[in-house]
Length: 191
Image (tube, rainbow, N blue to C red):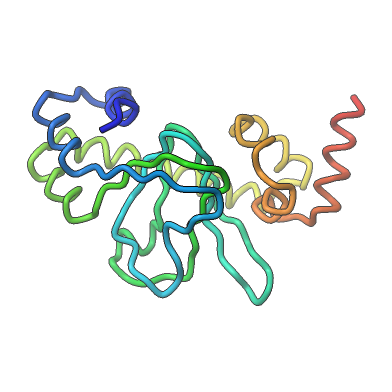
């Protein structure tokens, strides 16, 4: 098991030797090429993934159009949150945008880990709080901020992803057209 995951968790809680051993036992390493799918619609997502290397996105399809909801990179987690937490099929895709190394943890094994290690459950609550705050900020941004403000906020909070994400996917994530995003980027580069 990668030490990246343990170091990540140690930023939130102390990790005992017993907890580290359990994480080693339940964590499954995945090495995927660019374009690989971790999840597709109409399935239950039973795994959460910690990204050790690479870039992954969550997106939906509406007709022929792809709508990107989330990007996650090194040191972050990704899953189909609705499906994972409610144990129901959903409509999202999870796809690698770069060759990626991930650590997957099955939901049932994670829940048992939470029962056996209360500190790990605390970590899970902290992680979920962070995720929901980020989603709430994104919704407020989409509703109340200009396209330029949304792009600037993305650069402020996810600059390490900005140059790695294809223009069309970023525009979709920010709720604007590619042309609008291109114009905003050109104006920003002019200064």
